[in-house]
Image (cartoon, rainbow, N blue to C red; front, side, top):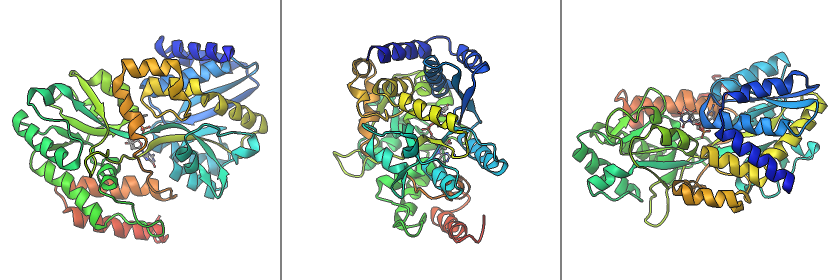
Length: 418
Ligand code: FGO
């Protein structure tokens, strides 16, 4: 117990201290190591990358002659592209981050190690997340950085105009319209993509089909996209088409957004107003809306040498201790993977000093996964995301955009296109 406490304190200190030194420390730790377990990831900077690196540094300090080396591969999509190339060349890393749909693909390609064979345990890990990592009864990944969408809002703007923070979709629509009129510009900011669409779709009861056929153009989907399009046309919502919303907070009057909890630190540093975080508006009064579960799991590749895989299993256990899970969540905004994390005294103190974060814990009980299909990554970006963008930019009606998307989905699912 004592050793754990020391490791975690070191980790916390590592997060808070000058982050740039992490890269140097990792390089030094891995320079003479006989066993190097590469962890390919899709973090590109900020709190998520710093915290992952701090975790690896702290873990490596417990080892002799071995190390875990996190290596950024660019974005999440760059990561899956590079992994597919690695499968083709046979030079796989030891571990990587993976969305559930990526795992379906990697599993189909015969690349994932069954974690039970490495002795990986899932005691006290979030059951829903663990289930999402389980295929045909076998565990192929452990939840690491799982996020939920929450509502970020400008407390000052709401109180200036005497508008109540919405808790239902009807209130949300009215607040967006009223506040935008008062502010003289659109206050609901969103990225026109599958993630934003997913919030509205799930909250209105959408399910992307019945599990047998993938559906993106049912009546609920059309209704969800129409709401976004109408708000945009009417000057109550603004599509942010060039990157993260949190990078645009200096330009114009921001009111509210639905965005990943993993952006928490970025939002905190980008907001020049009192930032509020709360659960998403729901369909019925008294119930939060839904939210898309994003972020990734850690997987181990079958083709890596045995010594690296054993080291990976030890790292997974280290990453998932209640304390390290708590530290990771506190430093980033991700949902803790270990259910015991929130009982940590440091976590309790954190909740008192950062009450916004409690929205993340509450929202985690009202969130849904996107389909766990190997084609999903391509569909969410190149088909559904494109349809959403087309509709909000006025290039097609929501129904026409989604009908076209459905055709592309059908072709992809039946193998007519790749
Ligand atoms: C991101 C992407 C997928 C899939 C969902 C999939 C692939 C979505 C969405 C597309 O870990 P999350 O919650 O958040 C990310 C985290 C680490 O980078 O920090 C967030 N971030 C980073 C910089 C910043 O300025 N602000 C900020 O919020 C970042 O989003 O994952 C959410 C965003 C997207 O990448 O555009 O998950 N996503 N399902 N990506 N490849 N495949 O199936």
